[in-house]
Image 1: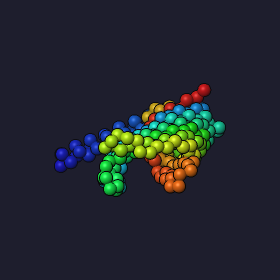
Image 2: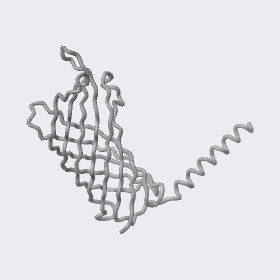
Image 3: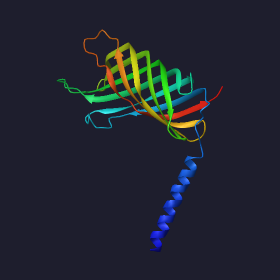
Length: 207
């Protein structure tokens, strides 16, 4: 009985402490600018290609200026690099490695909405152009098999969430759906369509 009472008291203390900390900060509603950086590790998290070795990462920098209390317009620069190592089905079975790198600049429109003093959600849409480069190498001979360097167009649209740890700094989760179109004259070109969740930090300030 005593043990149960102590556990309840400790649990209540933890909950109360959390609520005090949560309400200790508030969003900076008067901010006129925001800047952030977020990242995404690239790997086969669902094990869709168990025979392949996939690794890499992506990073996104964004800047926005508020047009009104909720709406901001800005730019975001993104860059990604990934490698995929696999065995071919050719008669002379060998390993190949494909390295892909792309980067670009988008303009974006972002609508922010506060839910509580600490939490806000946002919807974002961005569009722009960039460059896509791929190099495939035969690992047995270390010779380059194929390469490509192409312009791309990228449209990103999605939702996100900010948790404010201070009045100006928020931990941000951004979940965009990405449409990447490669402008290529090759007969078979795989464009990327998919979700690319990123986590990072957003800083708000008034100028």
